[in-house]
Length: 476
Ligand code: BG6
Image (cartoon, rainbow, N blue to C red):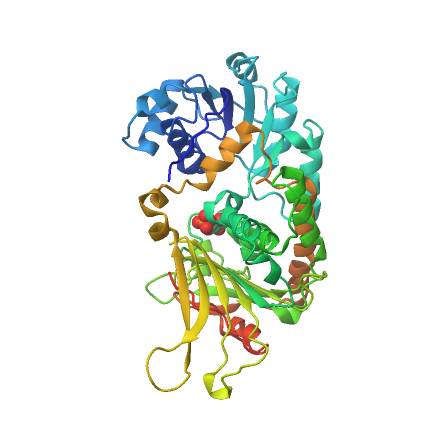
């Protein structure tokens, strides 16, 4: 397998919030890896901007220590400049304007709190930095609810056309998430079965072992529903449920995803379980992590969603995500219906095919098929997984799976919005999420406690049991 690196055009990328955690942990390492891979041309430049008083040499030194030693690091660092910039004041804007080259593709990455998006967008335009091809990248949280998301969209729309705005959901940049589309639309095998007639139900699990320490303030205001379900899990659901777009192209794909979100039924209160991890003496619980002894924010949520359209009516989507669970594992499982009639009699048991797509770690897919248990003893059936773990199937190249940010930032430069969320999509996702949150706030019920290292609260198991189904194990 030969990886094909197609260099992008030279660019000026301005990272606002250049000293922040995301810039140091994700954005700059991603750029460095693409530079090393030969995808970023030597004429490209990355301009760091932040309030911190520092010069270019100082920022380069910070970036160097964030990147660690590596080949071509000095050549990459030589592409970096730094400007002291005040998002809400006038400091630094003339210097930034003087640093940006007039005839080079320009992109701004607003790696800052969303309340700064509007003042930044205004100043970018006011200082003549918003040429027609200029792009703006924004991160989640994109709003806290529908009203705030609309306000952010409107503020950006005052200065930029929607074609210039790149809303990142980093799950869409994950190689395995893109693979969902390849599996569905690159094979004839699955698509004829991909509907309520053949699929019993779908499970989407995003389980984490990390807690919320370090981001307490943000997380306690958000909770799992806003932090994970409204965006990442919603995107996974869309890719599984959407109709085949006519082309793998930005508007075509996003149109189809939007239709899925709009087809989601409101979630009934009895179909949601919220949880909060409790301490076990050795490891602090959620409330200690956020320093709020009374907090009612959920660190776990499980729910049953219904997509009310011709393809999916009657096939539930069970979604769950949580912190401090027993393993880090993100998996989508398509559980097919049992064979309509067992010619082997009841003693052969019930067997169903399951297509499980493991997003992380151990990226890959398994397809459970039913076979005869080898040896004597009659016709005994057994489910065995056909295993397509990418690391094994693809050989050593599989270890080179790029980080989501590498793909997404290169897409910004290429001007490809396919893997970014459109304004109407984000708003539709909030329109579905808001009543769920409002409902439990009204009911005022505290989230159910669950043990660190468990699979979440017992009630979440019941959500499936009462439908005669069960969650798959959360295995690493
Ligand atoms: C972020 C959430 O968007 O995604 C975090 O804010 C979460 O709470 C993270 O931990 C998970 O991302 P990944 O790529 O580690 O699955």
